[in-house]
Length: 281
Image (cartoon, one colour):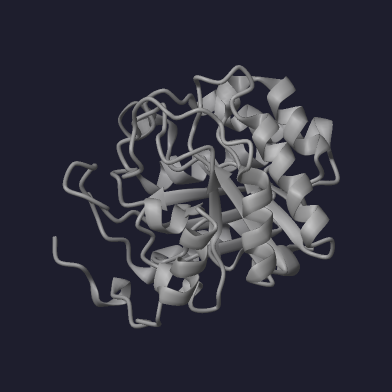
């Protein structure tokens, strides 16, 4: 399908300085690995969502273009390198995410905790958001991350329950919802956030049902954006959603009790994370 006008990037700012800095510190960003359509805008600020635990994921989600396969061993220098890059960028808000590492006994939660600690040591005034996988439902791994003291815990639902088998094989709808509930039980003071994609074939009623399930499990901050097919091997776009529908969905979510909702075609989970955190507190 032809890309609608409202989805075309009109911010072709220079990416090179931020990309050079990331390469110099041997760092990956999910912005590049997942081919985010907003990376030009974000890199020019600069800001970036740091991708830890390597570029290879142990799952193969239908929407995602991050490489899947056998991951490399965990890099012991990675937490310090992320902190150094964040400090050189003078970030006030640092987003840390990862591929899914089902091959690791702790799912990579220990690396998250070490990276949070390293960033805190270099940028003690900065806020830290972590965008985590489901850790195969392990509450011990979740506790490891939360006890490191992130300012926001983010775990993306991505889509409605009916579509999980195609969109998120290897994940489980109820298990992802449980991440929110368990997080609030372990660390009730830490805001819980999640993101959705529209345009994969979901119905409006299914989205409302998902929002109700998220609120029941104490998710507080929500991002909703349009799914865009990153490569031809990924799931096709079923429908481009009108901007007015995103506006309606934002009002509906707020009426259901979400503290903050960012909803629009180009909204992404980590985009303007600092502003979302500030406006939700």
